[in-house]
Image (tube, rainbow, N blue to C red; front, top):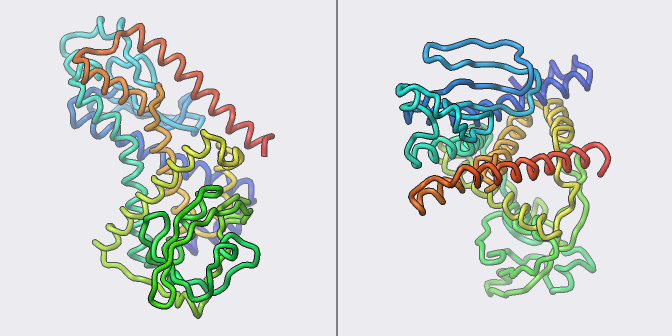
Length: 379
């Protein structure tokens, strides 16, 4: 499959390849997200009116035997599942429509269901995105294994934080800020997203443990897809002799376990980035919208199918986390309302929900405008 994609990539103009890869990546991630909503909603006995991939004018569609209209729309920048009783694609309740439903329709309307069914249906979308990432990582680990190297210092960069703290060649990292490390990649991961934050390092030096505090400094690097990114570095180098690099192989079950761990790390790293971004400790150019994603998809497709699939996995986690933010009309906003409803034992008043939905809508639109600006003019 990788050779086939590489061959196609070689025969396509770069713009065409970028567009095809971008649409493929988005459709897969959006389809999995909406299918999570759809499957759990159906399992809960909720009626589904529409399943849409994309927004805007319908390109083609069909109706299934349950009365759901499946559609593919012209603008592939998202999708939605519209349940019985929904006012629109964001699943906000429509009081007039609910009041006009027949008894049979009310029995399957989304907003007449117990709060746990609504919460499960809403949470299923982001959860499906996390499952997709786990599945991709599990397959990659089962096929290729995992490249690791020992967390040992080969060289210390002069005038770096590590040099000023007295680190020496031969030191072996034991933990970083209380997190045990098993490979040099673990150290890089824990350090790269914490620029400007003092971190406590425990090292083994000749059989004795020493503890030092280092503050990673910001440096620009180029990632495998050619993007210039700012990361935290402490100034140590690992090489073939000290790291003894090798590939760890996994059984099918072991690959799944490792994939869950890897997905958990990506989720943790993403939340850390968002936290640092809010307080102004991350570069705003690190956030990109459709244009940046399209560029990354095109580059990944040019490098082979495995790279494109890994991009899908990472984007899927991002979409899952973004949708869990407690802002209506995102999934997290719905879950926030359901949590309040479960506590006060009655639905949040419609007038309050409507006002919060309007504010949330403008926040989401503002965020989209921000990333579009970054894509086109800001960075």
